[in-house]
Image (cartoon, rainbow, N blue to C red):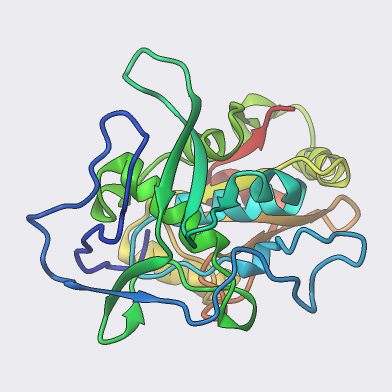
Length: 283
């Protein structure tokens, strides 16, 4: 969210089974090109993937581009950490080289989220040959984050329609399950702040998906927080919860700005000062 994105057009959509979604936008012409990934595959097993996991899905495959959809990027990372097979099951390659992508989305304001499938091509908005949304993962050829982002853009009407969003909506779209804000839901001023870290540590051991969102701040407060936590911190931004240590009293937040910023390590006492919410995906 902290990045200022250019306007992007949704292009390259061959068909669409999501109710109300549009195949393309005509009013957004900043980017008139699409680029495909040469030799791209939906899933590629990387060197850092778990030895006992053959899905090819890893949170480090995700890299946010110039779209302000950190909430969706961080949700992909969180679900990939907890249940990589869940991510893999959302994407099916077809014989014609296109992909059927399933998300759990609502038909209308009062409807429940249901599985909706959209067929997308493996070409993505670009400018001067550079991708403007998510970029490819392992060996710059792994497509699953780009395909899921494109399906989400179709649901939201365009790539610019993804700018700003709710973390719990993104995790629901990927899993069909709701999330709870455990930072405020479980906080107890009568206990030491470290107890919430111990809870998070246990959830991660149980392979539960968790993501965190930072508060919106003034420029000066954001700069001060960067000095405290490092360049990986940004206000009004979403992260996947990567690790927690009850003994050290810290959590580690994984930034979707892959390769551009370090993880953020935050002490228990800082959680309510700097975080807006910590979302735990329901079982």
